[in-house]
Image 1 (cartoon, rainbow, N blue to C red):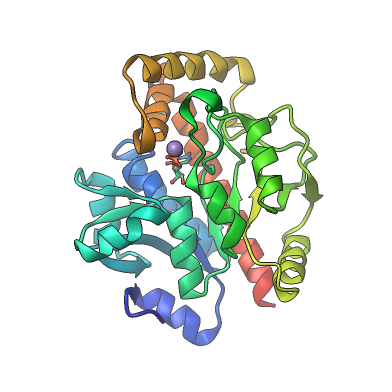
Image 2: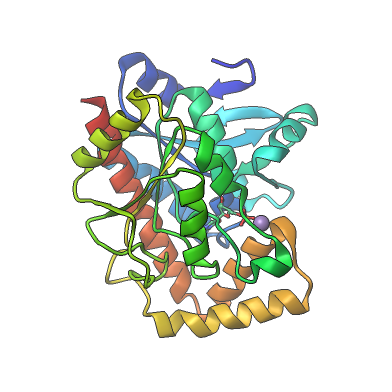
Length: 302
Ligand code: PSU
Ligand code: MN
């Protein structure tokens, strides 16, 4: 194990006994949801992983140490904390050298999960190609990471704040398999449908485990996107979310929000515009992804 990494006791035990482990990210806690829903969700998600036979490892950087698994007090700190950096790949060395506290995005969580030997990671949604790419040139570092780091990311697709067709095109260019779970369509986070057919479809955790084994045992490095549709009873209809997204995008432009602040800003505004309905959907889908992530990790351990 790298000298920069600390394993939580529960995770160290899981490694020692060969028990399945699922990585979880911390940006969704610190920058993706408001308090206290973020804390309740982070705790529920960890329990969902346990209830499905795996051990949760929420990943973050504390005082420059890369933490694989957080204690309940650390989880609370990330939910309440205000001076917590948002870390993607480029920011990790800064956080380590300056002994900062940082929440890991999908890209940074994938890196630390891979270094710790964790193959499955569950989150809400991945970053992607932003709308009006030609103006902002904003493509999430998550996509580049998926192109090279061998971790499976269970998510509810990409949010409709993004350009989903361009995101799928870019993932193809990067050689990243995109699998829809139990459906033909790539999910769009808040909504079950995105209007885009997923490139691949698999229907059971065992099929996904076999897919991952074929990819990595053959030496085809890089990540995999597993798009798990949000639970139907909490998912939103497209017309319920479209207006909220459009308003949030206009506001972001007016306020000249850019770089790493764009996604947290849009998420926060969409939550306000939908009067919390999008947050409810967000919580339900993260938990749904944690359950599937655990089932995949269990199938891989067999
Ligand atoms: N999707 C969510 N909530 C989040 C994020 C995505 O539903 O909090 C976070 C993830 O950590 C993702 C990051 O990796 O946003 C992408 O940020 P950016 O668009 O700046 O690359
Ligand atoms: Mn960006």
